[in-house]
Length: 219
Image (cartoon, rainbow, N blue to C red; front, side, top):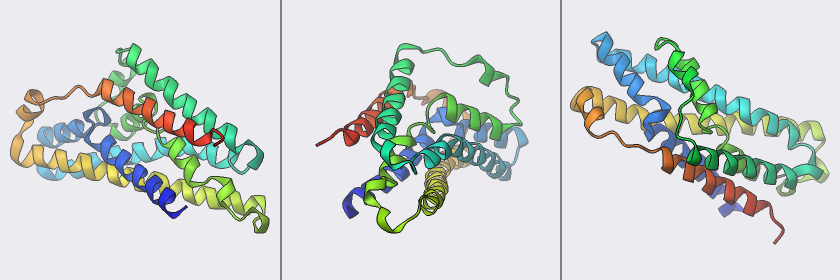
């Protein structure tokens, strides 16, 4: 049990680091904001806005599951459904290379809104669902001594903790890349070393979803 829980929390942090390193989650926009303002200090408000948007996207996806997971008899179905959704989104992104056009219409000054929308559209928030359901699995709780309300309260707190831990890892990883670009590398480094991570991102969604589905299947 301890090993499983530790692995799940590690997955929360690692997925956050992965999201932060992915240029598609927005750290180049923080670099752009800093360079356009002509001062390095402008980097931090931009990273803060990206973090706020990412955190809110996590909550929008995870909070409904926090409510539903209190229904103990549906726990296995929730795990299967959550994992299947993540796999489906990963396969869709593999087959469809088009970017949602409405994201390009979000003004650059509204970084928090952009971060919120991109985390939803690209499945960054949905990726956490199988991990979250593993952390708050009802069969691992002392249900004989907890009322449904207490269980729901516990899951709400866990939801906030998962979202906060994941977002912290995301902004640390993305912030480190953004700071290095602003201080040492310059904007040209982004143009010359740009990595297309779309396929890797889609495959990672399929992988995480598959792990979630496998964990829900009877042994």
